Length: 142
Image (cartoon, rainbow, N blue to C red; front, top):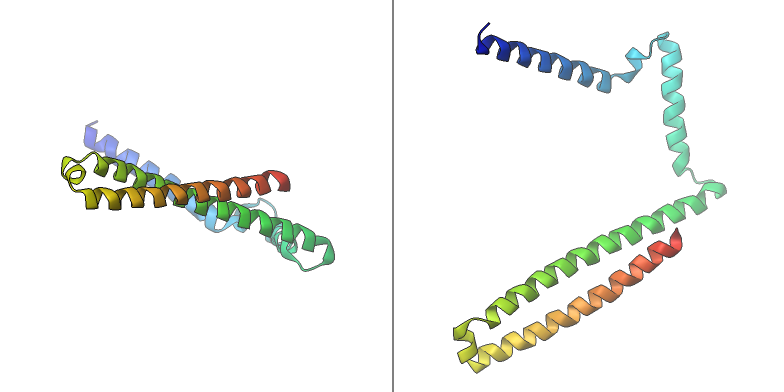
């Protein structure tokens, strides 16, 4: 057989396997093995158990608050990490600018860059403090 024939067979095989898994993924009830009523009951109990996770009963309110706080902490950590990375890249760029010969010769430019560098360093310190507070909250919540 030629190389083209092998390629066509391989492509058809990959396509059929992909279609099979997509069909099962989209319709999990049809392939449970038993009667369709039984599989529907299993599917409904699974969806009901997921819905009870976010119910408003007093028992689950504490869990919901814990989950909400943990998500807020994680989002705060991600936000502070992004800002910290951005500020570090800016500081790196400023350091490269200070090495430029033309800027060193001009005292006004050098003074502006030094002020900018000080401001970025202060932002980095603030972001680091806030990030450490979020991480401490995350450790304490576990």
